[in-house]
Image (cartoon, rainbow, N blue to C red; front, side):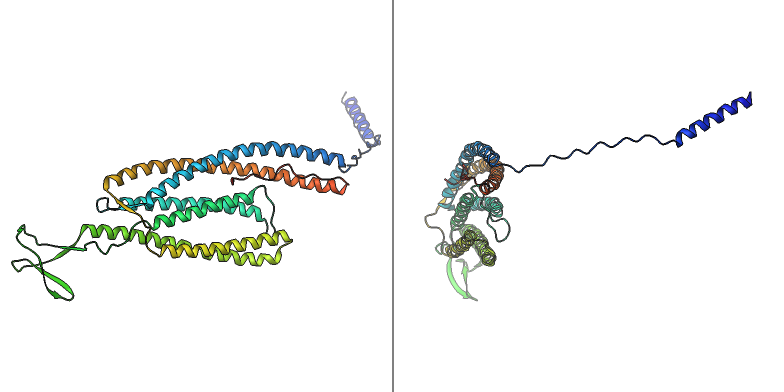
Length: 376
């Protein structure tokens, strides 16, 4: 039985081995599918693509115009509040009764104006970078030139307001009595008289012959403190104006070098205009420095302590409202910039299609929009 089992097993192995050695029938591979030849777009296809882009541009431009009106409303509200604050503060100053309350409020408002300038400079620089593109090139962008003009006007207005407030603190008054004299007793019969001098100082005597000292008057101390605050504020403003002048000079040196790389007359004229604009700003900054170095803002009047307290409370609420509106404005400007960037992309693609259309003998049409900005 075992022999039969091994014989059957051997036959199975041989059969399997012989089957493995036999050549298997081969199947011919399926012919590869040839990719269809891609035909370049036709003139009609370019024309339809441009029409579709124009529809998208017009639709988004309409939304942008409505959105811009909302931005302008918030901006106008902020400007109205700031103007009211500056006009109120520049016409008043501290009295002996108010101490330095008004001066401290002015310092806080000036700091807020500097903060506003920092935000606007950031917005402006971002737009200038997009407008100028790579060194030696000027890329037309959707309404950015007008946006920059609008922001420049806001910056200059803030600088003027800082100067106005810096000049409104008050100055040292030569008519204010600096010293008062008296003794430590309560004898009202002791009348003071000027006596001999010692090292240039008047020595005062009581009627009993006792040498007495002198002390600075409260009015003089208050005036000196307010004047010192005003002088420090003006010095800070002058330092900032000088730094602005140096920055403008540096920019002009770079712009003058860029003139050598201008690719066309448009870029050359743009660069020349920027140089001229910066030179005018330098002259303006020098005039502003001179103004700060002259006398105080005329027409300021002193207010009492109670008036100063009420002013503080009112301005605190006003500033809180401005901060809320300013956050809204920054959010709106960011969204507005996003919408303009999208339109920029549509216009860039449209320009490419128009160039291709012209090569095919078609007649390109101008874009449906010319740009929307905050400037009115």
